[in-house]
Image (cartoon, rainbow, N blue to C red; front, side, top):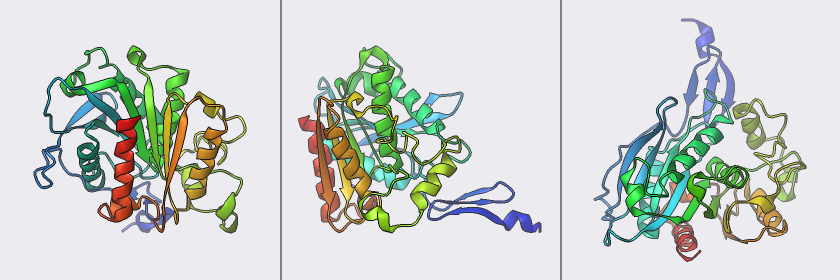
Length: 319
């Protein structure tokens, strides 16, 4: 056996390992489950997979809650999964189960985007794929487009973006781009929900001052090799030269952080920066005491996870 095939050249636990022969081993987020009606929970949520860009394979899983009034149009949520831009998919059990529960709780139509991942497809591929998916969703706004669930049941006056970790980072960047470029049919975003957003920067803030160069920085420079440094505005939205936060293309923002999460202080910094930017909107923040990064995905029935989901659903339905 060629010893080089087993030689690890890069190691990013708990995400992935890269071997000398170029092989990538993902350590998490490799399981998948099919779309379905969810009889186990009694929610009545249905889901199906759709191809958005056949040339690249970009796809999404669409969720539809139990329909009691076929004439009613429901809020529309476009969701971007987390995983450091390199693991997880829209069809992983973690995200499938979470979206099922969220769609039932909030009574929304949801589109969970399956963007291509690094390192095979380095950032900015995830952003380009997510933008293509968002434009595809918006193309249904005038009751056009190929997907009947969106044409018949989505309210394009109540469109939200959301994500966790790297997915929250994507949601932020898509909200900025929606202002810069515009969405199909003139669709406007009503709000974004950023759960434990993956933001970072070269300057150390608050509790970060005690930490050495860590995973957040190393991972970004690996998944985005074109970035000059960790102050790239896509990962550091408050960096010098970053797009002005006053240009966020929505009216409301909810930032969710966790007390023990290493990204907590970045979430607070983002909240404060948006509030002070002159942006004409309302920004809220929710902190889960005693919890770590994306705890709600791994312990969805704990009190803090239940409270987070209820706040998420309330934000969508009362915006």
